[in-house]
Amino acid sequence: MILIIGGAYNGKAEFARSFGVPDTKILYNAHEKIKQLMKEHRNVEAEFKKAIDGIEIITCDEIGLGIVPIDKFERDWREMTGRLICDTAKKADTVYRVYYGIAQKIKG
Image (cartoon, rainbow, N blue to C red):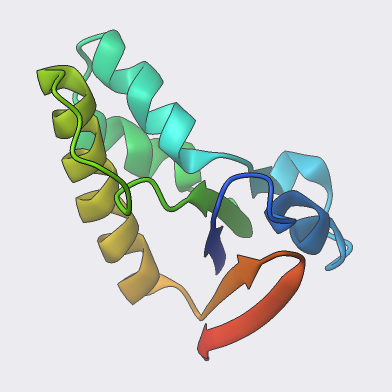
């Protein structure tokens, strides 16, 4: 599995598509999937693991670099995303960070 992280609108999706993997094997915006699961009050960890089963490439925005939100849900979402993406990075074969369209391999 390949994990691609970076800022919003910095070219992660374009970089993910450059591998020639079908869109059905790419999970774009994992942070939004996690938010959706939380809003639906689902078992986020279990459901996220199901969602990435068979996925070859995952993209995720880095959402914890700004000011800490006042809203509790937003703080919880950042924490959950951080924990799940850390776990995903450990399991990934390769991890890239993409900024301004430039990919840097940070694992693999």
